[in-house]
Image 1 (spheres, helix red, strand yellow):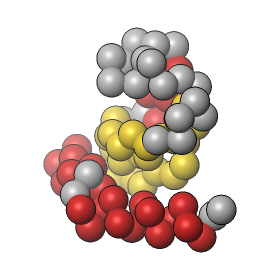
Image 2: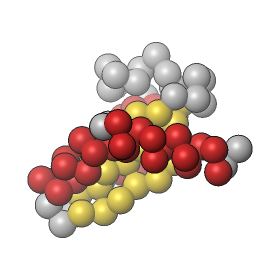
Image 3: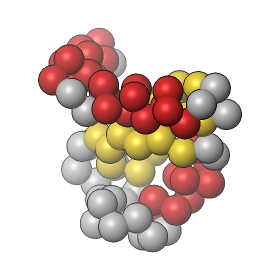
Length: 82
């Protein structure tokens, strides 16, 4: 199984989208500073994640979340959860 996940930085409230086979392990890597893209934005928390059968499906979903449509959807999520 693979997962697409969205993290939120508690430092600057920005989000990060990625995919991996173990969400908790990946969150630990992010929060320990081992991921270059997020090391200056820790601590991070998981907003949500989605499960997929294949890596290809997870990567496709990651790319959608990073697209304009995905970012708009994420914006709607924040508006609902203020």
